[in-house]
Length: 536
Image (tube, rainbow, N blue to C red):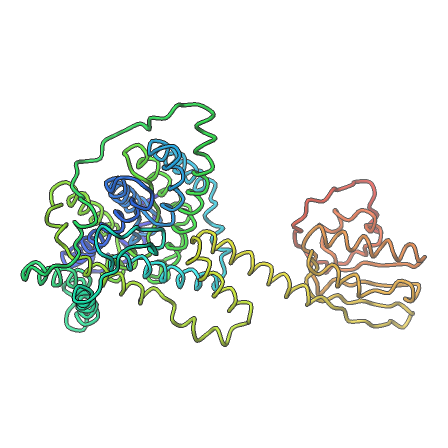
């Protein structure tokens, strides 16, 4: 599957660039940049979940490596995320970290099943306003998560969105911190205007860190959060009883984690796809996320999913192939095993500056202007999804947005049902139905007719309409019954063959025609054979 996913990309380079030394350098340097940005995120989210920092770092390494190898979109970055961490808190607090590892394994199995059954394709149902609200909310969440770095080390309590109590920096320490953040952002903004030889975020981190270390500036550093030093992850079967009670404990968490992880990963896949002009890969990404989480659970990791912030860093740094994601994971492992003392000296201000630039690049600024031009319901959905993302989590926000968009669409289409009314020379009254007939429009459809005062012969023509579901069939049956009670003859024209088969009482009223439409009805309706008479 991975080979197939990469075939288009490899063909892209067959004309000359291929995987040249320059491309390799860009990919590896992009991976290094991402790895540096992953460290504080993984540590912070481990604190959120209530586990050791290495549990978050191992998850970032294993999930990042496996999804880079077999994921649905080269260039995407996965690792431990806050959206998953906030769900894990209660499980760890109530039952311990071993139950978390078991839940992560089950989460991965569920995600693999989702990929095998190709459930990832349903991400297409997410409307564009929901996507805009999603990226806006995520940008705000990333911004808020950085605010804890402006608190005195040891006093901050990291939460899911970074909003937590703690003693804030003030005076000269705050000024220095802000200056270093601004310096990093200025380098990231200005360097591409001079050269693309090195990813701007990496240069920003390197220059800012060099200044801090050279002049011994006293500012919060990575090591002030926690030590990241450790060994290679070890295979470890979760130490939980293999009982039905254990399954009852972990299954609800696993289902929620699997859903959140897939929604965030698939939305990230779409977002990165728009930037690099690639499509598809949803089912493959589901399987990759599932395999990654299953393996992570057996190696002492907290699980993870795609990370939009780090994916944006990678893409903006020039990462386009699997090499950048693989490099990021291997660099992260190297940081843990051999380079922890050096990485712990990096000032948090440099990493905050990188993430602030990610926020600026992620936020859909155009949405602020188009909200005055798009329909009111779309504008409401954008704002609603943004707010729910910030207040709760990404999965809840997307589900809410899809539901509201679907209800708004149903309401708008319900109002479209109407009829052109005319009379023929032989005294028939003809209702030419226009607009979709479905559960939302059945009430309006019923109100179009007046069986009591209509003439003895009535025709309902569905040539300009479409019968969509069982509610529509029931409404047709009800109208036929009213005309039958009034002792009047009703003819139904231009209904699909599905309607012929599914309508029972009104079946004998259908008049066949060579130009009858041919479409399927989304209905689970009882077919009663031997009742319909098609007038042959």
